[in-house]
Image (cartoon, rainbow, N blue to C red; front, side, top):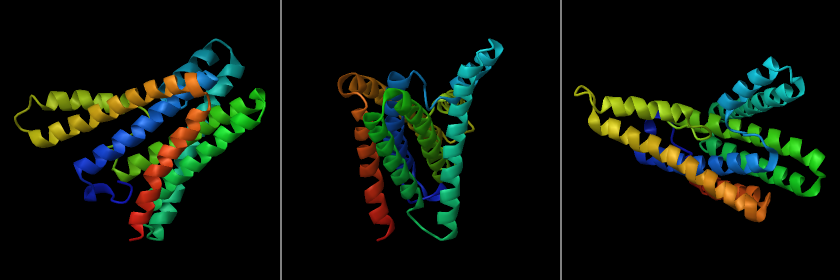
Length: 230
């Protein structure tokens, strides 16, 4: 699921990618909110909050929301650069390397949260999580030709509505429409389920939930790297 690109991908591969990584993203986003009070994957909400805080002249808080958006964009940028370098050098596993980088960064942020005083660890955690959400979303969007987005659900919800409407049209390939509906529903459901698990896990084990999420990402990325070299 982290090797084939674009039209080489099947619906089953996209479904597996969406289900696994959307669940991880949902868990990270929800646990991150419990830890820091900010959503690190929801850029629509963060831009809206930025506008609110500017309008209310709360410039310090506005700067925090702006930094979240910039961190997300920076993560997407770095993922894009990594992928372009990998593609130019014909590295088949470049997308798996991107998820591997996400896992290692998440581990580093978790360690920082354990080791540093809260006033130092919280900024690292919140902006770091936003960075890796941008990194993940860029990788999944690029490998699937934008069919799969794993860190936010606004686009998936829109696509879900459009494909429900397409079911009423006799001129559409209904098998393809149903396949897309399953993909969008799976993405939404996985993000929701991951978020529930993330919240409950954070309430029990605290920041160790990020170590578990990083472990899941490693379990996803490392076998894909081995397959890319076979």
